[in-house]
Amino acid sequence: MRELHDEHNFEQRIWDVARGVEDAAVLRHVATCAHCQDHLFALRQLVRFQATTGGALVEPPELVTFEASRLMTRIRPDLVAQPPTLSDKMRDRLREVAASLLHDTGLTPQVAGLRAEADRGTRQLVFASDVADLDLEVSLLDDRYAVTGQLGMDVVPENLSIRFVPADQDPLDLDVVGVVESVISKQGYFTLSIDPGDWTAAVEIEDAVVLFPGVHL
Image 1 (cartoon, rainbow, N blue to C red):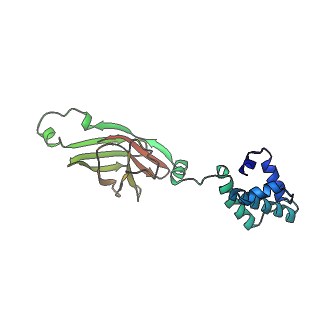
Image 2 (cartoon, one colour; image 1 turned 45 degrees about the vertical axis):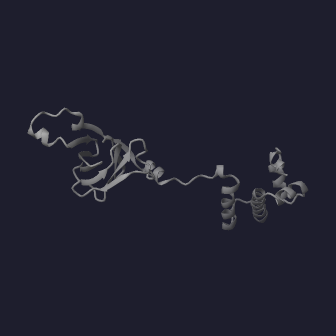
Image 3 (cartoon, rainbow, N blue to C red; image 1 turned 90 degrees about the vertical axis):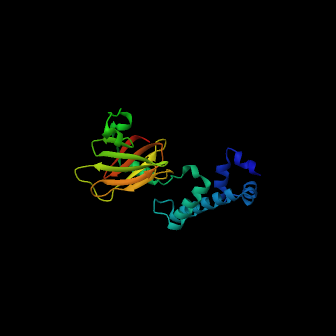
């Protein structure tokens, strides 16, 4: 008898049953429908609360609140607010600062000579922003890149880390797969090994997250 769900007045009929009105068709349906059993139970709890308080605006018992909240997730999950994720909290708390790529020796023609020949295997990238700068030295070792970097600030806060996130992913999403992370020392230095590809580096500094996009390896 699930066709009762399609009746425009079904909600009113099950509410009437919760208040004690006899409705054989609704009761037969509820006996075979777990969803409506929960729905009717919640409505009866509300009716009992209203009857015992006279409809006054008082705080409902914890049991009623708990049961109503628990059942709401099953009866009307679309109305239940989802708890914010860690990434959502980060977006609410932090401001984004995007750095600019100032120099990339991989894009600059090398001057002929002994020094150019010696440095051919090492590449340097320099980023700048209002909050922090970033210098990277990149060397290809076998099929991966060895990265040595320094975060440039007047005073480097303690307990910082730098995350390299694939460029096609959200750098503020803490659940991204494939992130490479390294601890930053008090002098701003860090080292890591990373696969070839396009990356965005990100550093959370107090109330800001500084993004260094365009790390093409």
